[in-house]
Image 1 (cartoon, rainbow, N blue to C red):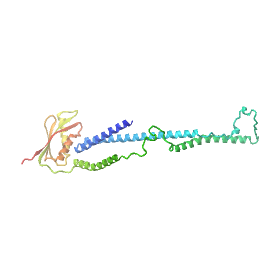
Image 2 (image 1 turned 120 degrees about the vertical axis):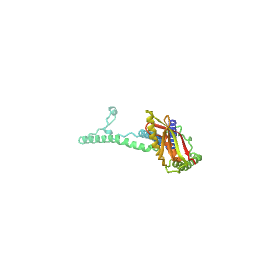
Image 3 (image 1 turned 180 degrees about the vertical axis):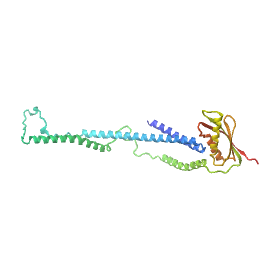
Image 4 (image 1 turned 60 degrees about the horizontal axis):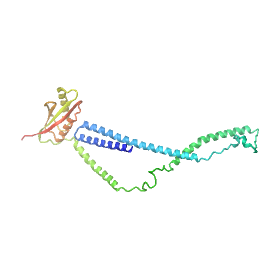
Length: 305
C-alpha cells in the first residue's frame, strides 16, 4: 500500500512539474491556448494530489477510530468480567425446592391483612430493579470503558517492544540544513523567475530596429476541408488576427500566397524582437477552428544606405 501511494505521489509530482514547466514555456512564447491547456492539466494534477492526500489522512483517521473502538470494547468486556454478581434482595419471594426442606425447619409467615399489599409492592420493586439493572448498568459501563480506553496500553507487537526505538530521536543536522538551504534558494529564485516571466510577457512598446520590414513565412493546414479556398481564408483570418497582437503599429502588413499552403507575411516597418516572438507564437498557437500553422522562417530586411 505504501509503495502504491509512493508511486502515485511520484507520478503526480512529476506530472505537476512537467505541466508547470510547459505552462511557463508557452507563456514566454505567447502561445496562449497551449498555456491554458497546460495550466488546466496542472490544476487537475494538483487536485489529484490533494484528493489523494485527504483520502489517505481520512483512511488513517478511520483506522485510529476502529482501533479506539476495539480498545473501548475490550475494556468494557474486562469490566463485565470483574463485575460482582447482583445480590438477590428478594430471597423470600424466590421459589423453594422441596428437597431443601428435608429435615430442616423453616418458618412461613403469612399476614392475611398485609399479604396482598406486601406482595404487590415487592413485585413492583423487583420490576424497577430489573429495569434499572438492564438500562443503567450497560450505559455506565460503556462510558467508563470510553474513559479508560485512553489510559490502556496499546497492544504489544514486534514494532512496539521496549528497546526497538530510541528514547530520544537522533539529531539530524544535515536534514535541517538542507531544508533551510532549499527554503532560502526558493525565496531567492522566485523573484528571478517572476522578473524573467514579466520580461517575456511584457506588452510595453520597444524601440524599432534598424530594418525596413519583417518577413514571416508559415504553412497553414486545415482539417476536413483542404481546398485552396478554405486554406486561403484560414490563412487570411489567422494573419489578420495575429498581426494585431503586437504592441508596435503594423498598419502596413501584407500576406502573399506561395504554394502548397505556404504564405509569406510582410510587416512594415520592422517589428522589434519581442513583437516578432509574439507574432510567431500567435501564428503557431492558431485558435481558429480546424486550423493549424507552423512558422518556417523569419527575417528582417535591412535598410539600404
